[in-house]
Image (cartoon, rainbow, N blue to C red):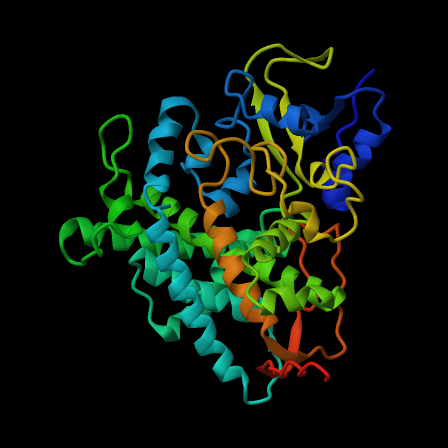
Length: 418
């Protein structure tokens, strides 16, 4: 029987679409059509291991044009496979040193502390927007990209738009396309200036590394592609603002988690960050294309079919996570996380596969920022804190508004009674 195309249903149901299709399926594989193409849906650590094996699935031909035109950019590392992907990926990984990440965290926390000081005038602030501006300012300076303070709000708005527009066909999508055109032109011109000597890139900065990088053909990246890859460094870093807003949402709903964060419990802070990334919706799924006729759990996957890995479903799978719809950072304390278990930013080895190379940055930034957030006192005025699973990418509707922000009052520990 013909298989119905579910593109409109996916756009309407959002994060719930593939989990719902899996519940209705008679076997381990969902058979469907998306964008007119045969597609199969998979879920679970074994499925993730299968998906990220390049002998099974390739990414080069699978990313839809609208996603490349908004989120990733045309010619990006995400569109490569095999040796081309590994060489380009090595460029990104060279920036992910312990020292480099610590430098970025330091710049970000400094920018955060300066921003918090300006919130003390009693005005209301939208945390999502403020976090985006803080991170934009810090990551551009870390990357060696010159950005005046007066230009930070516009740059942050464009970088947020690149993420905010990939999962829709509406106005957010076209806003993202316009933002990409502006920022690729800006960074492409900067790369040309660095190569021509009209501008200087700090040694070993992201700008310097990308401008000097040579692909497998031995050629420098085209300036537009270099701009794409610079955006693929700063854009996902700014996307951490989604998780900052989610963390505030979690602390508001479950305030008991604030105390260990305030006290500087490093183990709990990392567990809290992992639970935010697991519990809250970000990427609904990832897609690739079957390189040949394949079989998964006894079901046929034809060559050329889209292979969809259910990220949101796996992060809420009761076979993997006990009581998955409860927010419980304790589930990550003392637990070794497998490469294909927790996959909000992909699975496998980030050095060689398609897992996000900036995942370590995400975790480090969040650990630093949620601790600072927990050490603030603030009011949460009436607002819409709902998170719609139909909106991709999801976020608190209000952006999480805070009022009367002030440093937390440290209360003395009572003396023991005698």
